[in-house]
Image (cartoon, rainbow, N blue to C red; front, top):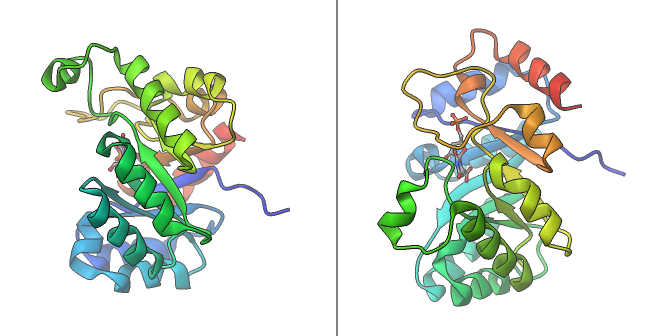
Length: 229
Ligand SMILES: O=C(O)c1cc(=O)[nH]c(=O)n1[C@@H]1O[C@H](COP(=O)(O)O)[C@@H](O)[C@H]1O
């Protein structure tokens, strides 16, 4: 059986040259590469093809959030990239999620429903007028998404344990907001370490800056993998 990859590296560069240079130097192929829209908007399938052709699993992070018909077409379009994973916002609502599931149909694409971004803290609840706590809201959104047929959810390590315990159906729990040390002026609010996230139930952790800005990214990948295995 194919070994499950537990580390997704967020390739949050702004030019394809930086991304290519980074990937040429990466020794470990046993990782997932996440491409967000900073690269995808500019380079489209040039960047996704590059990731696939180098043998990495492709995590396309477009966080779709729109009317159902537009998201349906967006998911259909994403299928052409050969992505293994694609993010959509669970806050987009039930109809939108249903259309996303319909669009991916029998393909191998795994849809990941983002719950509450790891850069938010409780202040966000006031902003959206939620009567729920972040934990409650993330759980509610995850349950809806998984019931509709979304393959996985994205949440912080703070919520993942309860979400894993409360949802009986099988799904993938993806956890960003991972830190090995403090980053000055960090925009992330709900963060934990790689091993904490995995011990709390994450199936995949997403790590960006701690790896791509490391002096030696290969060493950092190795260190994180040792910490989660
Ligand atoms: O969907 C995501 O990947 C995502 C969801 C979320 O709640 N928080 C979050 O940080 N992410 C992404 O995960 C990556 C985290 O990067 P670092 O904060 O640099 O480790 C970024 O590419 C974010 O866009």
